[in-house]
Image (cartoon, rainbow, N blue to C red; front, side):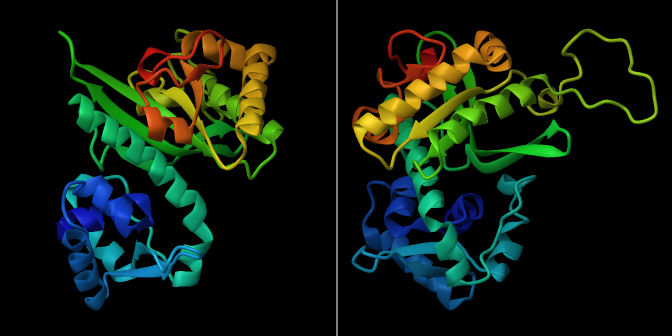
Length: 285
């Protein structure tokens, strides 16, 4: 359990006791998780900040010593942990980070129910890729998920963006342009002629993914009417921007409300395809 707790905090940055229990030991008692967390804190490897208006609920994070220990875990190869330098620093990142983890937990619970493969290590927050002109796209998370039902296994990947309605709807929709740029971005050699090769064969994302991950946008933090308007704006961007429209013809794009994922599961008909059509599971976008 100690190793799993350190790994989970290394990946997710911050997590409440309740979230860690749901992620790692959903059927165990609260003490099964809280006791090793308190031992880790006494050893200086983790610490916590108290969430406001939460009956003193704790949000846990790695200390620098905890991060130094976790960075050598084989399961975290290529995914260095990011320690918090203080409870104040942790509190500044807490609202968004905990909401991203809420999204992950909806997929974890659904995978357990269905018998699919998706664990606490199959979700990598804050994944960065260059998109040209010195700019980078930072996805809130990359999801890895294996469907095991039926006659064939299917490995699915998705970029996940979690929107808490803290930015304008226009800025949210503009994120789709960044994904379109990543989809087509081919870095050019400096000072050398461009080699002849098939169009698209040198795109950056092929270094990391066999297929471009689908793009899932999860919305929360506003009324159903406001969230519906934000999804409509995403659909309008998909229809009107030529590069996003081209992306949508090749890559599944969908949006859903976080509360619907938690109430109905991600494999229910809760995802709105941004290119148009009826609501469907994320696996069928």
